Image (cartoon, rainbow, N blue to C red; front, side, top):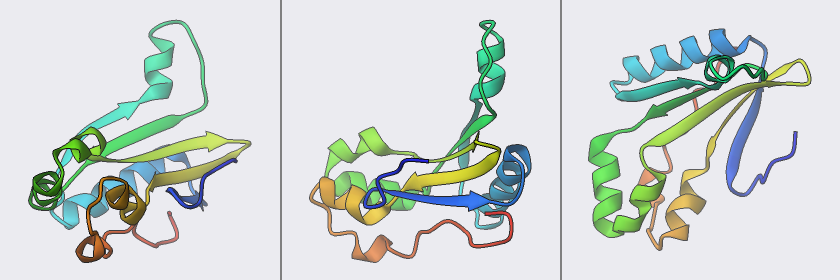
Length: 125
């Protein structure tokens, strides 16, 4: 698995893609963070006669935080809402999201007040 550790937070999970996605959706709901969409790329591939390893993307965000970021620099809207990707590769499950500090810095935003936003650390992720 090749990654840019400066830009992405990637973690290997001990569970399946679907179990991990279910768990992360529950955590977001408990934190009252809206989920805007869930894309199942593996299922979508089947609709065009193709196959790929399980890959799910959860699109989520906190409008109060996203709005503050966009008020500082509207161009960051290209990156929002945030996404978590969960996929299978080489018989392992991986979870990834953008690191928020470098993302905000790329748009000239001081993100110190947003650094508490991280992926949950549990046996599933």
